[in-house]
Image 1 (spheres, helix red, strand yellow):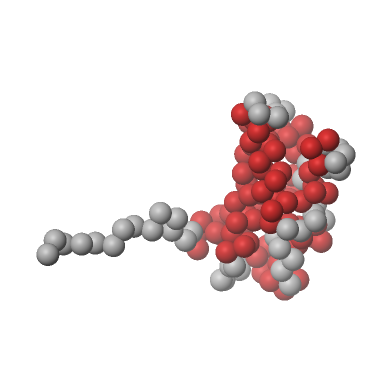
Image 2 (cartoon, rainbow, N blue to C red):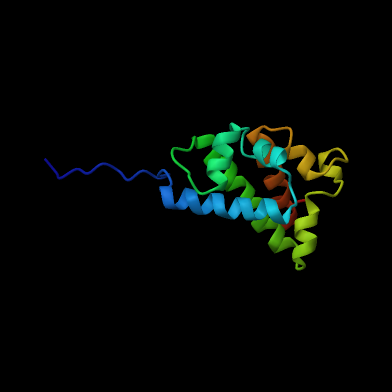
Length: 134
């Protein structure tokens, strides 16, 4: 019989160091976007206050996959904005401006509905704009 090895996992779980780096980057992004604590908690999936402050203080521990996805969407949104806008202040301000794609609401208001799908929708909109499919 041939030496069979299991296929590598195509989507391996992120390492603790990667998750910690994601949190650091997202909390910096929240500063750039000038979000209050409640807005930050909603975008992170409404963790308890103690969990939120642990994450903000660098005490990460076990993190639900939903939160890891939220970190990824938020960082992807930030990256797309940096590509679209040459002026960082325009990129950071975009989330606060009214947008026809979200029924005249801002992207931030859309994301603050709280569902991870809302983050994905904002990212998809930015990817469409970035790729010319607006």
